[in-house]
Length: 396
Image 1: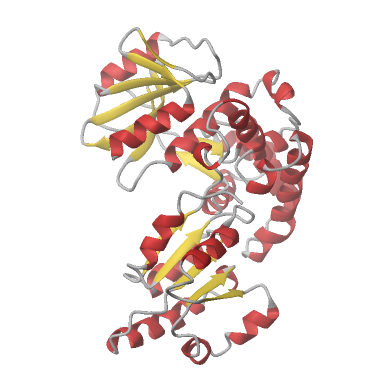
Image 2: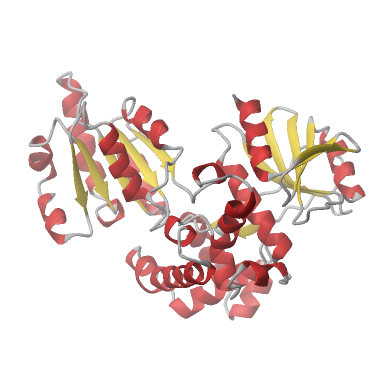
């Protein structure tokens, strides 16, 4: 059990919205978090849990209005809701009927693997009635210690709780392999796409090999023996399932030629290492993916810490000026973040040129060390944990 930082946010949201949806890939901890939330609010409101992959629980909802009327005073948790997308229309009628009677008790917590179809149906049926929360992997402040060995373990094994908590790197590596196989052979087909598991496995592995690089759809298509439009469809699917991040470039009004292609990252570092057959930390240190693995891990951690309204990009010109991560707090309010898998990081001239282009307010280098100290050109070198603490102070 890990104390997830989203817990209180979701409890607060349940007091403000008839429905709260927790979205995330399987095994990320949605069910555990839902039970924890139910336990914390149990004194004020009892709860009931329905797993829609369980035939018995699914059968109970053949007449949702009647069944839920019997539990109008409870928090109702629907797990694997993507198995029953028509439920959202039923919930709309129930919620609106209760509102007309002046009753606001009986909230709904729905859990599901993110997909365009699920989001589309829920947002259309429950517009103004549902709040979405994305549950990601464990972050540095949800584990034992935010620095040192625990952080290296989180980077190596990834943020899925079962992988991180495995007995050793080998066991965590094996868990990730099982997760990948199950997702390809069972979970993705259940969501509808008819894509051969072997093809999607090759595509997922190619994305791991090109971690943090500019998307080259034609090159990927050539390697897979498919059309570029098919690669785009595969990528959309992986992004929808919250397994891959598509980081877009900053495209503001500067008088320079800017890169327009996005960068792609396999979101969980443990999955990167499993796809590339990197079994432990020692093997990672000697692998060419080391720098991009750390970059993806840091970017994912930072983006997941950003509140609504704060946006993340990368910046790159055709001349080579580059910032790994640009955080936009508002109009012309930018932080520049360079990411280095080194304890003695150095910056290229292109970073400072890019910072001048954007007139950044702050410049940081997130490295694999544990200290925080200033360096030349008004740049601060600091650990990932120190950066997150600094970011939280900035956003309040």
